[in-house]
Image 1 (cartoon, rainbow, N blue to C red):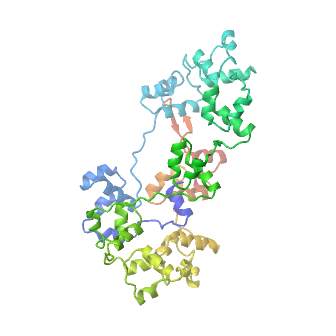
Image 2: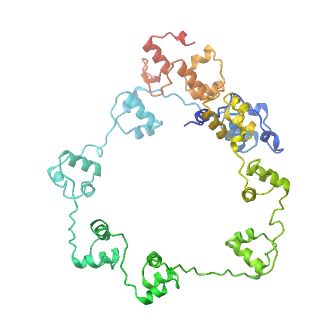
Image 3: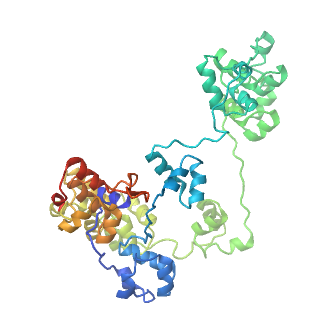
Length: 483
């Protein structure tokens, strides 16, 4: 979706013309001051060329051009005059080869060739393959890819020919595995990979027989637990037991949970060098925990063991006025006013049992009456909320979007519609391209078609006729009716 159309659909369309100045335009003393002469050259040349003239970098020119909503400079394309000799070359070689020979794009060559009804060029390599009885005999005896590699063809050509002749595709003859009682007895005592390696079959075959035929869960292994093994559960870590028994730790955990034995959590005591103990009470516990990659209670416990008080400023001295502010505004606004983090405000508000500030309090009857009278972005900037919230409230109330500002079109400007591209007309008139498109569609004028060619009678090739001229010829519409 085009950016201009996207802004129009979500209610962010701006009035036509130059943008109103913002504080960013004059806030920096080092900002480059654009004179009227330099500003008039924006969009008339490339940003790099204007940057050399103004003595600034190219990005400065790009930002100023976008701020003024001036489209980028696009050099005009020269019309191609097709001669008889150029047309004679079409179809005699590939479009890319003809384009390189004539010095034009190969896509343009293809458009012209198709417009004249000239078939594409096919080289010797691209001609249809002559299927001999020997080649046909190869179909269906092996995979299509192998036959294609043998005949030096693509796989799609082989598959198409085999389908036309009704030859079934080649099936890999796989011997059916006959499961014996010995093999079935290994299902509960060995892994799938072990069974496949022992009996020389595929692991997926074992998996299919286990899950589909026998209906057993994948990886379920029956293990004979001894009294000594059961005595280790709950006293040794699950991962250590899994390493000893050669199974997964989940298998150990399932057996332990089945017997109701709690898990063993190995205690890893954090080492406290002198340099880290020196920071206790000086740096907040949260910052030390972040640096040491541990939890905050670990730092707090070590600090209390050493009898060190918390760092000053670690706890916020909440006053009555600060408590009164909580819940009356959003947590972000309260954090901005108090100069603390939003997390601290949220934690304090929840500890006091206060409900968060409802965002919908901003909607008063007076504000709801103004919905649809201006763009959602302008109202959001005025009320200090997001444009999405304004758009959501307007849609909930069923209020239509503010219509874009109307523009008076002159007969001379209407005459340009359909004769030139919408983007070019918009750049010439200094307006948005969507405005040009809406005006053209309102008058029923088709867009300019670049692929419509007509041959000149003077033998100098072909030229492009605007789509509006074709519409006049088709409907017998006088030119003055568009003015």
